[in-house]
Image 1: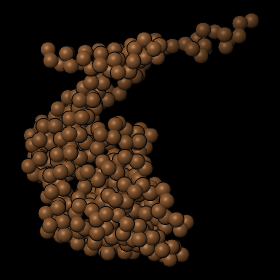
Image 2 (image 1 turned 180 degrees about the horizontal axis):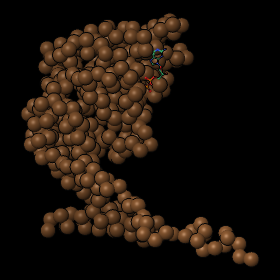
Image 3 (image 1 turned 45 degrees about the vertical axis):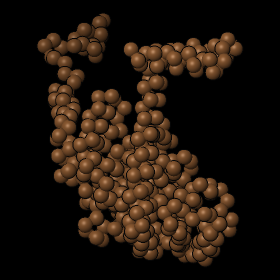
Image 4 (image 1 turned 120 degrees about the horizontal axis):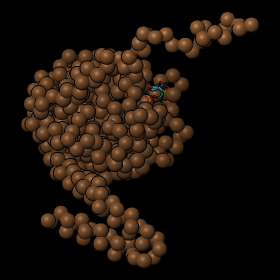
Length: 367
Ligand code: GDP
């Protein structure tokens, strides 16, 4: 006997005629994408920035950070146009090893500065080791819990990984846009683990080194160069049981600084202790920074340093763009691969290979 379940009418996979399948794409999806893609004109960006519109400022910074050549062109035009409105800020560089308390401190520093309602704060970073997709060390806004909810604050993580020169240029251009948008206090943060301090130092007016009290041998492991760049060294976490240790560390740093030659600014770097977490000693740090600003504006060093920095950045930009133009050239890329092989098989020397490639590049450029 034929079982009813074997009847065609009851088969599970029967498709009833006349029932249309559902559209697989959300009909609203395309138009949403289109709406999001609108890029403003250069003048619209410039007007927005000069108006202090934080959303437009953020979009312009995204163009600066972009690796697309067409974005680069627009970004450069924007920078060029807002340049006359920039420069009117005090720029503070902050460095310290991971865990020194940079973000906790900037949160407290910022809240202190915001007590004066005229202040507008931008917090930028240079961290060439980071990749945004992996979560930049300096990229997490939630690290500055209080500041990230305040008006008049613009927090921007480090431009994502690239050459230090490239990352630094982007941050420097971002400073220009922020200043044009009316931000008058600019923090540039970096991790104290390498060359990035020099880059930050070359774009700020004041350089603050955050240190921790530790084993009693605080000076070990700190590069002399970094200490020499500092206009002030501040020992963080001077709270609870740690106060005495912090005071001891401070006296060690003071002794060490005495051995250094006097900096060109004529300013004698100072050492203070504080607690970023508990907000202790913050006023003293800003009194010091104010005194510094007055001192270097009084003796002409402030303008001199800014001019020297501008000159430095011209050379940096030339260097970076030459390298980029060279290494992004597909023919040169091919030739380099061949030359690498020739060097490995001892068919040519590094110098000859370099000369060949450079000759090829420069002949090409002259056409
Ligand atoms: P960063 O890596 O330099 O940005 O350091 P964080 O600001 O993230 O701080 C690292 C750790 O130190 C966190 O657990 C903070 O809570 C703690 N910390 C930061 N500042 C202080 C402070 O002034 N006192 C104490 N006791 N802990 C702090």
